[in-house]
Length: 126
Image (tube, rainbow, N blue to C red):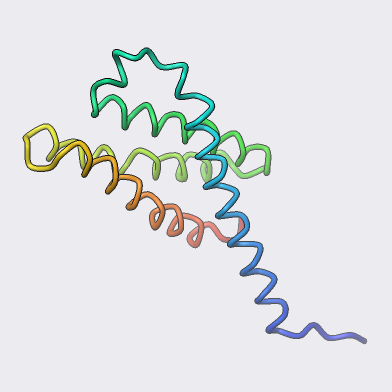
Protein backbone atom coordinates (compact mmCIF):
# COMPACT_ATOMS: atom_id res chain seq x y z
CA UNK A 1 0.00 0.00 0.00
CA UNK A 2 1.37 3.38 -0.96
CA UNK A 3 0.54 6.61 0.71
CA UNK A 4 0.55 10.01 -0.87
CA UNK A 5 2.48 12.62 0.99
CA UNK A 6 0.01 15.46 1.78
CA UNK A 7 2.56 18.20 1.13
CA UNK A 8 3.40 16.83 -2.31
CA UNK A 9 -0.27 16.56 -3.19
CA UNK A 10 -0.97 20.11 -2.04
CA UNK A 11 2.06 21.41 -3.91
CA UNK A 12 0.84 19.73 -7.11
CA UNK A 13 -2.59 21.28 -6.67
CA UNK A 14 -1.08 24.71 -6.13
CA UNK A 15 1.20 24.39 -9.16
CA UNK A 16 -1.76 23.29 -11.30
CA UNK A 17 -3.87 26.18 -9.99
CA UNK A 18 -1.13 28.76 -10.68
CA UNK A 19 -0.51 27.22 -14.09
CA UNK A 20 -4.19 27.51 -14.96
CA UNK A 21 -4.24 31.12 -13.78
CA UNK A 22 -1.26 31.90 -16.01
CA UNK A 23 -2.96 30.14 -18.95
CA UNK A 24 -5.93 32.46 -18.49
CA UNK A 25 -3.67 35.53 -18.47
CA UNK A 26 -1.88 34.35 -21.61
CA UNK A 27 -5.22 33.74 -23.34
CA UNK A 28 -6.30 37.28 -22.42
CA UNK A 29 -3.11 38.78 -23.84
CA UNK A 30 -3.44 36.73 -27.02
CA UNK A 31 -7.02 37.94 -27.35
CA UNK A 32 -6.03 41.58 -26.97
CA UNK A 33 -3.23 41.29 -29.53
CA UNK A 34 -5.10 39.14 -32.06
CA UNK A 35 -8.49 40.86 -31.96
CA UNK A 36 -7.52 44.52 -31.46
CA UNK A 37 -6.90 45.12 -35.19
CA UNK A 38 -10.53 44.20 -35.92
CA UNK A 39 -11.90 47.32 -34.21
CA UNK A 40 -12.37 50.52 -36.25
CA UNK A 41 -9.76 53.16 -35.34
CA UNK A 42 -12.41 55.78 -34.66
CA UNK A 43 -13.98 53.54 -32.02
CA UNK A 44 -10.82 52.85 -30.07
CA UNK A 45 -9.85 56.52 -30.24
CA UNK A 46 -12.37 57.05 -27.42
CA UNK A 47 -10.83 55.81 -24.15
CA UNK A 48 -14.14 54.50 -22.78
CA UNK A 49 -14.84 52.47 -25.91
CA UNK A 50 -11.22 51.35 -26.06
CA UNK A 51 -11.26 49.77 -22.59
CA UNK A 52 -14.51 47.99 -23.38
CA UNK A 53 -13.16 46.63 -26.68
CA UNK A 54 -10.11 45.37 -24.78
CA UNK A 55 -12.41 43.66 -22.28
CA UNK A 56 -14.29 42.05 -25.17
CA UNK A 57 -11.04 40.86 -26.79
CA UNK A 58 -9.77 39.40 -23.51
CA UNK A 59 -13.10 37.76 -22.77
CA UNK A 60 -13.44 36.08 -26.16
CA UNK A 61 -10.02 34.44 -25.97
CA UNK A 62 -10.28 33.55 -22.29
CA UNK A 63 -13.80 32.08 -22.66
CA UNK A 64 -12.68 30.08 -25.69
CA UNK A 65 -9.76 28.68 -23.69
CA UNK A 66 -12.04 27.86 -20.77
CA UNK A 67 -14.42 25.97 -23.06
CA UNK A 68 -11.48 24.09 -24.62
CA UNK A 69 -10.48 23.14 -21.07
CA UNK A 70 -14.11 21.95 -20.56
CA UNK A 71 -15.14 24.46 -17.93
CA UNK A 72 -18.86 24.87 -17.41
CA UNK A 73 -20.85 27.68 -18.96
CA UNK A 74 -21.61 29.22 -15.53
CA UNK A 75 -17.90 29.23 -14.62
CA UNK A 76 -17.07 30.75 -18.01
CA UNK A 77 -19.74 33.42 -17.57
CA UNK A 78 -18.49 34.29 -14.08
CA UNK A 79 -14.91 34.64 -15.27
CA UNK A 80 -16.08 36.67 -18.26
CA UNK A 81 -17.85 39.07 -15.92
CA UNK A 82 -14.53 39.75 -14.19
CA UNK A 83 -13.20 41.13 -17.49
CA UNK A 84 -15.91 43.80 -17.59
CA UNK A 85 -16.74 44.61 -13.97
CA UNK A 86 -13.72 46.79 -13.16
CA UNK A 87 -14.13 48.86 -16.32
CA UNK A 88 -17.88 49.29 -15.92
CA UNK A 89 -17.38 50.53 -12.36
CA UNK A 90 -14.48 52.83 -13.29
CA UNK A 91 -16.18 54.35 -16.32
CA UNK A 92 -18.72 56.18 -14.15
CA UNK A 93 -16.12 58.33 -12.37
CA UNK A 94 -14.32 58.76 -15.71
CA UNK A 95 -17.48 60.09 -17.38
CA UNK A 96 -18.04 62.62 -14.59
CA UNK A 97 -14.42 63.75 -14.78
CA UNK A 98 -13.16 62.42 -11.45
CA UNK A 99 -10.52 60.06 -12.88
CA UNK A 100 -8.47 60.05 -16.07
CA UNK A 101 -8.64 57.63 -18.98
CA UNK A 102 -5.22 56.27 -17.97
CA UNK A 103 -6.52 55.57 -14.46
CA UNK A 104 -9.42 53.60 -15.94
CA UNK A 105 -7.04 51.62 -18.14
CA UNK A 106 -4.49 50.82 -15.43
CA UNK A 107 -6.85 50.33 -12.49
CA UNK A 108 -9.24 48.23 -14.56
CA UNK A 109 -6.50 45.79 -15.47
CA UNK A 110 -5.01 45.75 -11.96
CA UNK A 111 -8.40 45.08 -10.33
CA UNK A 112 -9.20 42.37 -12.87
CA UNK A 113 -6.43 40.03 -11.72
CA UNK A 114 -7.51 39.64 -8.07
CA UNK A 115 -11.12 39.30 -9.25
CA UNK A 116 -10.06 36.46 -11.54
CA UNK A 117 -8.22 34.86 -8.65
CA UNK A 118 -11.28 35.17 -6.42
CA UNK A 119 -13.48 33.46 -9.02
CA UNK A 120 -10.90 30.71 -9.49
CA UNK A 121 -10.67 30.10 -5.74
CA UNK A 122 -14.48 30.06 -5.51
CA UNK A 123 -14.68 27.59 -8.39
CA UNK A 124 -11.49 25.66 -7.57
CA UNK A 125 -13.34 22.34 -7.85
CA UNK A 126 -13.63 23.03 -11.58
